[in-house]
Image (cartoon, rainbow, N blue to C red):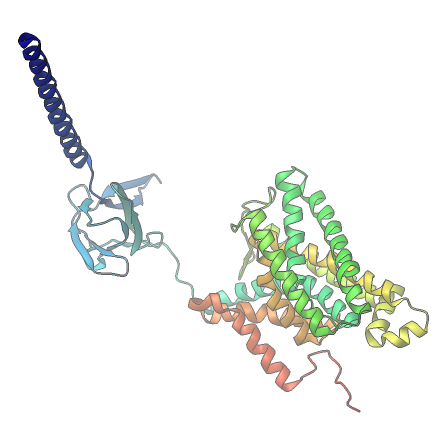
Length: 445
């Protein structure tokens, strides 16, 4: 028995010893792994170079290193991190304290004589450094071949751009003016009708592979149908229930907001383009430049504006629309079906808005809020020309479009605020002529 107990004690002692050795090895291994992980971690680094690029006598591009240029690195919105001097290879490298955004810039005072920072090199430049990685910044020096252009030399191009914008605004504004003339509704969802036309054409053209011209024709028909559907489904029932124009306007605002964010959800927030009419060579017309696409857009807008104006003046439907706009009750007493005329107005206005959206998409690209950004200018044109007057809307569009671009020409550093120019001219004209350029003064009493 004593021998058996002794054997058990020895076995237990061996087990305890083995467990202790195993625990020690595991702990040591974990510490070693942690040390290895710590050793394997990499610092955050910014690397870069300064190069001189030029063309030799044979026209071949040559790139050379530029040593001795000072590079300044600062935390974006914060303090300076370091200053470096490019080495014999024109390169620099430094560790930064933390991941994040840094500004990397060249000290222009250290650029060698005979060289300068070319326009294509952005300095300071924002560099994003990710954890345990490096970011690169390459700067190029050389002769600045950009021709200095005076402000007055840019004026013809600004005027041309203003006429182009005015032509697009006019196509969209005619429909809004006709709707207001016949119903009194200020339709804030008109901008989303413009966007719908652009996205309908884009979907057919890009997603379904339909040729652009056929896509544009189908999209125009779809936009007109949707416009009539909204008239029959929303606005006509509200008129029959004698809803106030203010209530209808508020409904149009809510409808515009809802549809706009549906566009963003379905199509995303980025610009996109049609599969046709990509990058085109610029045509030089002396004081201004234009692409063939731009000329086609302007020509289509001008032709459509003339055709719609002639249709309103000389056709039976046009005279009926003008009669309902002047006096709905009197027009009904003469046998004109006002509901039919209003539906026809929504049909034509929707088709024109769809075409305007397609042409605007050709000019700037298709985006979810393109109609909303154009809507303010459309309302300004309609108001400036005379509320409810489609011919005034065309004239107002011309004034608004030109003044928007003239504001950008006058204050190039504030192009984001270029619609202020349109608002200023609107206020000035309405102070002098409250009824608008072609509007008729209202009689009281």
